[in-house]
Image (cartoon, rainbow, N blue to C red; front, side, top):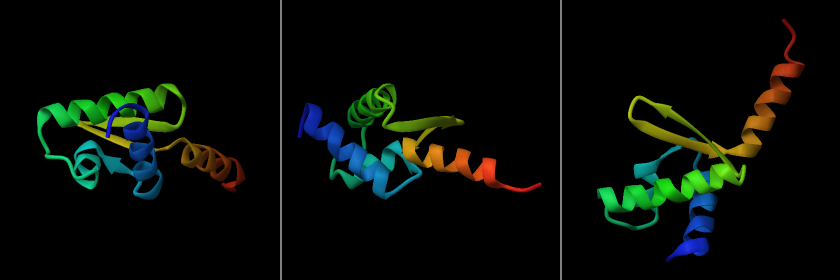
Length: 83
């Protein structure tokens, strides 16, 4: 898998298993967990974030990703919440 096909697979995994760590994505794609594959998936996550398909947050050294739609739902929830 390369290029756009890999990026779409990463997006599918993020949408089905969120929030997700980069190493989990590498494992779920059936790749060996090493620096090269982690950097490759991180690149695709950053591209998906640039396209506003996913959101990311760095917690310590870990990069966590979740679908952008969930961020919209969180905002709606905050607007509806009564204090």
